[in-house]
Amino acid sequence: MEQLNRLSVDDYKKVEKTPVVVLLDNVRSALNVGSVFRTCDAFRIEKIILCGISACPPNNEIRKTAIGAELSVDWQYEKNTIDAVNKLKKDGYEIVAVEQAVNSIPLNKLCFNSNSKVALVFGNEVNGVNQEIMDICHRCVEIPQFGTKHSLNVSVSAGIVIWEVFKLLNSSLSNN
Image 1 (cartoon, helix red, strand yellow):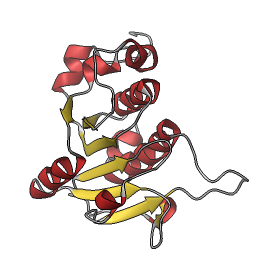
Image 2 (cartoon, rainbow, N blue to C red; image 1 turned 90 degrees about the horizontal axis):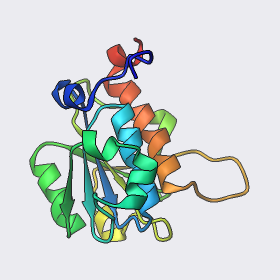
Image 3 (cartoon, one colour; image 1 turned 120 degrees about the vertical axis):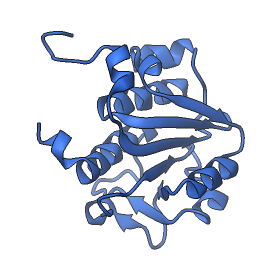
C-alpha cells in the first residue's frame, strides 16, 4: 500500500470526498454491490445508499469483491428507494438515473455545474431502474454501446459512469 501511495482507511475517512452519492436500487448480487464499493473507494465517492433487496455489509460476497472498501466507503440502507431519492433531492442533489431510456443523455454529453452534488441511481440487474424512480429523477444518462448486447453488468456500468462523473466534478484530483 505504501509503494502505491494509498490512504489508510482512517486517512480515507478524513479526506475530502467527491460530491457524489451512488444509490443501488434493488441490486440483487452482493458481488455486484461489493464491486461498486470498490469503485466508490477508488474515486472517493461520498457514500453509497443500498435500497430494497440490495445486500448490505457485513456480507461475505460483498467482502470478496470490495476487498475492504466496505470499511472505507460510508454507506446506509434505505428500504424504500423513492424515500431515499426524495431525501437526496431535498439535500440539493441532482438525481441522475443510469438507464437506457427515451430522452436519455449519452454519457459523453453529460455535464454539470462546478458546484453540483450528484446522485447516481443504478438499478436491478434484470429490470434496471424502476420506472417510478425514473419519473422522479432530474436526468437519465446512458452509456453508448456499439456491440450486439443491449446492456452492461451493473458494476461495470457503475465503474464507467462514476469515472466520467469524477472527471467532470473533480478535475484537479483526476489530473494528479
